[in-house]
Length: 178
Image (cartoon, rainbow, N blue to C red; front, top):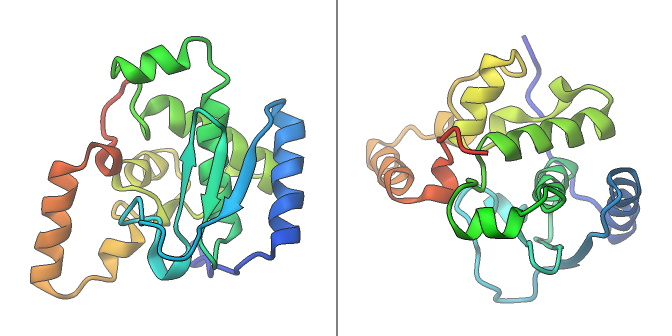
């Protein structure tokens, strides 16, 4: 049985070093900054307890919450890696590529493998539902349901999350597009 990952917030120096190491290895220049006070949250899943983050693909800038940990950085950097594919911008605009589809999962697997030395060490159970299912099929996690959902004991909250997933293509990401 795999142990549960416990997030450890990173300092700015640790983030800077991690982003530089990833940028050098993957041959892509990524930027980062902290979220400013009052900045709108972009995702239900990635902003738990200040761990939230999002990435502007055009500028290759990752934006991190106050308590960002290594797993969130690796996830957001995988989005940056996705911008190295030819025609990524047009494919994304036309809807040929899902934000968390097959191509992204492959990028995240490569980023985790490089940085952690073993992709199985990544906290796959905290990912978006489609990624958790995929990671389970690869043997990376014993779970088939995301950690956030496993923590919900309230039927009303569970129904709210299900409704969100039904409506949110970014969270769902359950297609097999690149």
